[in-house]
Length: 311
Image 1: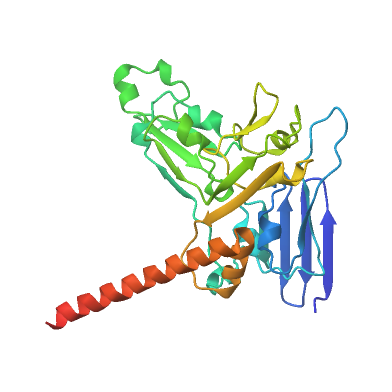
Image 2: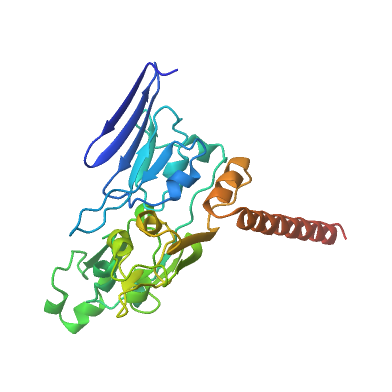
């Protein structure tokens, strides 16, 4: 048992601590990065994390759901840390972000597959930087002399050709919405979503003029209000986090279903259970079957190579 337990709920962060004789476990939820989605609460094996809809004040925008963590249930396993698509949760041991669930290979990492080819960048373009809804992209330009370029238009045509563009993306916080990919020059960015799924709005149940889901959606353009005063979805940008569903005032007006999660290879009962909660029993079984088929394919391939070598 811990010698001391601490829970602090401040404006910018929720902090939980276990203080032992030689170990100090700490969980920090960054409220500025948290979008009030469903991911961490569904992934938590101890059901220690809850999302609660906040009351809406008339005349104001809807507030994102509040995330709370029960210190009596949390065991600082780090599953919420690994699974959060926005990197809003960090679990540390003695100040080090070194999660045992990853070291022991009992849980996978999300795959944020983001490929950048700066050779395709237009030298004066900053479209992806300004388009990123979470301000996670920073563009810098380095001149022929190795110094940062402040005003590219002041350079000669020859000097412009020798400018190198650097594109820095904070991948740990990127939910892979793909907004940058579609706003950027073709071929510069290629983003594969970490979560695949389906989002649907029942237009008959969607209240006319209601914008609660738009108010909390962290991705610009994923949800829009149409001329019919109803909400419409652009699935190119949706990350299927569920923040919108958490604040929707009408049951079954909005549904979010995750069907696939891209992650590092893993064989773990802990992950299988989390996958079932994050997607569905059917989709979890589907992934396990696909994984088993792939393992059999590799085994047959290895046997074939071995037999050919013996011959």
